[in-house]
Length: 177
Ligand code: HEC
Ligand code: HEC
Image (cartoon, rainbow, N blue to C red):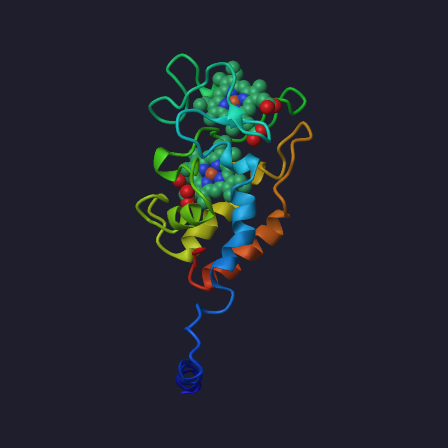
């Protein structure tokens, strides 16, 4: 009732009906982490990227058939279950590239948002809770906050990242326009 009245007032005042408050902006803090180098370097197409500027991985490392590298040069040949060589070689269990469907390379904020909530492209995660769960617990995600060798961290703590994700999911996972 209240809402109907408000809408009527807006209509009478000739104000275009605005999107729900906050809306697409709720994805901004999420994007600031997801699109930071520690994450996006692994969500690439042909090969992983390195460093904060995201240069193509050295040693001619490529995606290979399953994201674990070529037949002769697997990720695991260098990347261990934890950071090694005084942190110079990053590591976490089952280190490999994100599947092609989950690529963020070349996408803008809106594109990443749409990918993350699309079950066809996000590993069949259907609810907000399922989408978030991975980012709460996955070792490859958690690695980003312990990347070794003084690599830059994502722009907020993991705890704040989860809070931002929950706020976004509770609002129905709105994407930037
Ligand atoms: C070492 C490589 C690697 C790093 C680093 C990495 N990811 Fe991923 N990511 C993967 C792989 C592999 C999968 C597929 C796993 C699955 O579907 O269970 C994945 C899947 C995902 C998914 C689920 C599907 C989707 O695209 O919506 C999300 C969300 C995600 N990663 C977020 C992140 C975030 C946030 C970070 C940084 C904090 C990050 N990843 C860092 C490799 C990586
Ligand atoms: C010949 C050894 C070697 C192989 C094989 C290898 N890597 Fe790496 N990788 C490294 C080293 C060393 C670094 C650290 C370089 C640096 O500090 O920027 C690195 C860095 C990375 C980074 C950058 C992390 C970041 O954000 O700074 C990613 C992502 C990555 N590797 C993914 C992979 C994936 C995925 C594979 C398999 C498809 C793979 N690597 C295969 C040696 C290797």
